[in-house]
Image (tube, rainbow, N blue to C red; front, side, top):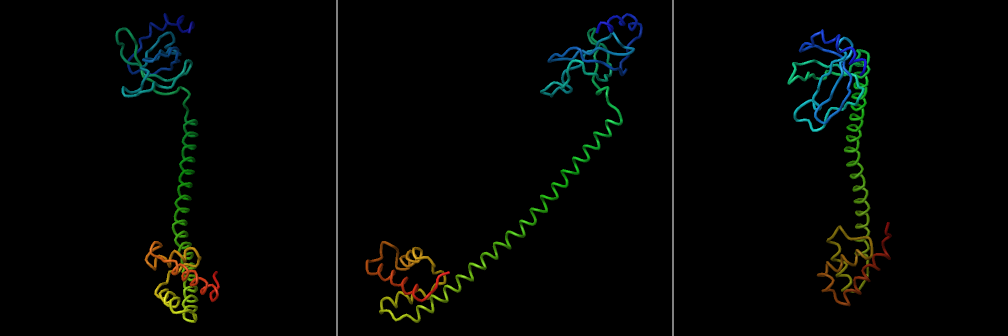
Length: 219
């Protein structure tokens, strides 16, 4: 900073022109502006840069004291030399190539992940319905075997007339439950609901189950 000020007198002879590009160091940060000291042949001169790149920006530009940047000079405004930041003075073609290579690698990585997700999604879409279909087919096959056995047991039973009548009603249905509790609920619904089932009918329901269990092996 001191050296820059010492050189200012000699550099004053060099007229700074609008549109000129120069290197500069950040020396002061304010919410509204940044103060930069010009370097090299422009040493000793200072320029002001708006803290925000665009009027609508909420956050100021991310710079800190000591950062070196390239600036483009503009006309003076009320004896203040204004400038805009063009970019870091440390930019090199090699650094830009490395940056581009990293970005391309990242894009390829994201693309591969996306392809894998799509492939996995397609596999799930095809495998889950097939698994569900096989599961339903297996359950239906077991139910069909159970119903056949139940119908055979009913037709071969030698129970009293009321029990036979109740058993005969089951022949109309293909969704007879295989569990005792569900079977009793099913029979109560068949007879008009739990509230309408009399004590004797409750006994008949239990006998129906016993008849089936003596003749049918439940899987």
